[in-house]
View 1 (cartoon, rainbow, N blue to C red):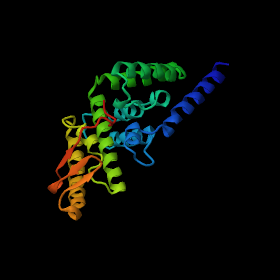
View 2: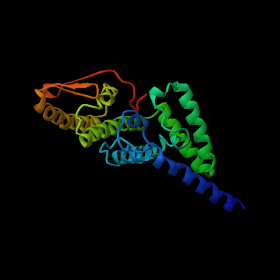
View 3: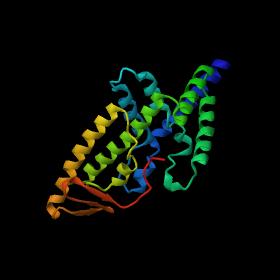
View 4: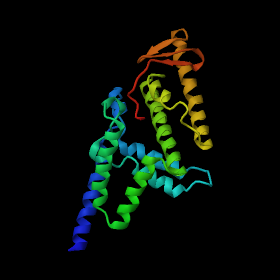
Length: 223
């Protein structure tokens, strides 16, 4: 009977986390992005960032696990954004409750491991958790850049970039951010050529040489 119950619980766990494929990232929804990515999409590329990190001092396997677990609660509570007017304490309470339910479906060893990984990320209590948080932000701005490219609207999602100012520290991440900024600056400059070096786009003014002045927004995924 225990084996049957265990298999049933594991199936329910897999069905619940499968919901992550159908939970859209709220920040993109609020900004009117067509066909926004899912939470699962976001976590997959974070896991790939963890897999491809070159820093030998980092526990790569732990980073991959943290990336896969960090937003798991959203299969139950959804992707809560800053503009939802829910306090950080309440957001944490809801996600903690969801994680306790999810991990209750797992055998004891897995239950402790996955819940422990979530707590580690939430508390930012290890170098790996802090690095994965940088991957979380990097993946967000990379996705914002891709949406700007797809829409042909350079600078439209500037607020997501602004929300990450001063939050990148790891050398490998900084290199990727630098490459992303260079590519985006070229697109921003190209986007101004047809309008006399200035162009308004979704509340963002793109100026010559890739400079950007953004009106304040709070719809990004960061908290």
